[in-house]
Amino acid sequence: MSWGLHSLLVATLPYLPKRLVGLFARRYIPGETEHDALVVTEDLNRQGFEVTLDILGEHVQHESEAAGVAAAYVHLYHSIAERGLRANVSLKPTHLGLDLGFQIGEANLAQVLDAAAATDNFMRLDMEDSRRTDDTLVLYRDCLQRYPWVGPVLQAYLHRSRDDLAALMSPQLNVRLCKGIYLESPDVALQDEQAIRDNYLALVHQGFEGGAYLAIATHDRALIDAVEAHIRSRNIPPSRFEFQVLYGVPMAGKLEALLTKGYTVRVYLPFGETWYDYSLRRLQENPKMVRYILRNLLRK
Ligand code: FDA
Image 1 (tube, rainbow, N blue to C red):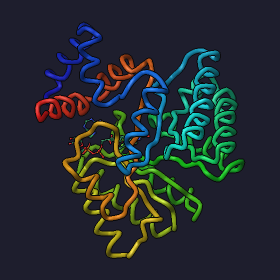
Image 2 (image 1 turned 135 degrees about the horizontal axis):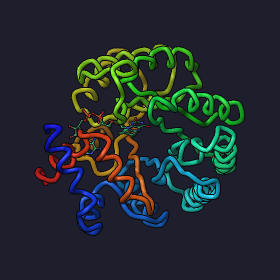
Image 3 (image 1 turned 90 degrees about the vertical axis):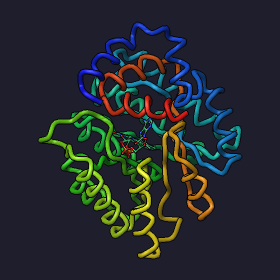
């Protein structure tokens, strides 16, 4: 899609009725409430999928809002436990107040981590844009000192990620690898799709060699095939990795095929009241998103 067409679409989006945008968003976001998300989680669990739940939002501007987000995550951990769901939690540090100051983000995160520990569950720290990478990795290390069941995300498009992986490496490491969703400049991030894919595979090789548990988060089926080929050639057991996808992205039977092979497949399920602003911001930031959504709608 040309930048011109993308700009036109993005400029038009805020003027579309929210209900119309909601029709498109529903495919990717199951609802506004925790209850909506837990119902879908139950269904995904029944189909054999694990889930990671994310409350939509980022860059909160008020301390009270960040505290409310922390409370909602604490509640979510307890709801998952009460319902016996196979689900963990993914969260964004700026949603918990990182932009308001490191200590604020850290304190809110500590509360959520306590709930993860109390319910014996895992916590994933999503990775945001490159201005937050250092702080997010410091937060991860802080959390790890208090509770082992926590994991970071590394983005294959960042030039720094192989060094970051080397620095984080330990048999205890549970890291999600993704390509990276934010628009970054060439001095911090690879721009070429094939170069990003190659770096992703290099991270996979490095991660397995170092003994880490890898969450392979991608919809790129050729990349999934390449990872699978590596897994087979090295006899890497399924207990060392899982595949992850975003809820609603069409995968043409690939996920069921992975389940049949005995692999773990986890679906990232975002929910929340801010779905509209969040969806618009994502679309405005990244032309790829508009292209994906249009393509998927046409396919439908
Ligand atoms: P690619 O971009 O090549 O997409 C392959 C195909 O998948 C596309 O052709 C399209 O058909 C489809 N597709 C991909 N994304 C889609 C979408 N959103 N909607 C519709 N169709 C889509 N990023 C980040 O910076 N920080 C993070 O913490 C995370 N966390 C995360 C968790 C999980 C579970 C996943 C799957 C992804 C992320 N990401 C992320 C996003 C990731 O970085 C990346 O931008 C997207 O997954 C798209 O890249 P792919 O690897 O899927 O390949």
